[in-house]
Image 1 (tube, rainbow, N blue to C red):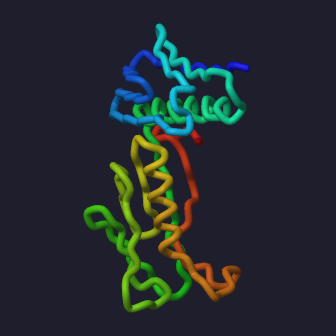
Image 2 (cartoon, rainbow, N blue to C red; image 1 turned 90 degrees about the vertical axis):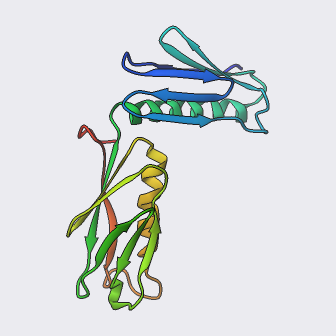
Length: 184
């Protein structure tokens, strides 16, 4: 059974396909290589007219499952270069006020639970980070980079050995949306 998925290309987006490498250009530019040794020539990505066609050779269900995954990644890349992604995180504390600052490619979290040292979280890719007193706003074209940066921040504020129902300090993801305001 041959699996095929199609992704429409908007007018304001240019897509370049070279083998399994896809480059999407719009307001920004994203590039991704979908080559995988397990797939080894079993999947084809083609650009025809104003559509991207992702298809497999029909050998197995596992290869067919990757067709849908690749099509979803391409849709996210198109959304990223046209609208962009915006994640909002809330800084929560009860007694010790958290101080969050951005330096180069990492986020510094100071005074977490009264600790003397600071905790750090890495910023992935070209994610832009804005910090105010109660919120951290992450924006970028790549949903993977923005999401991984949010996960790094949440992981840096992880508490162990305490009851989370009582000790609710931390930084938590509260909203995911496109920069235009639509929910993701």
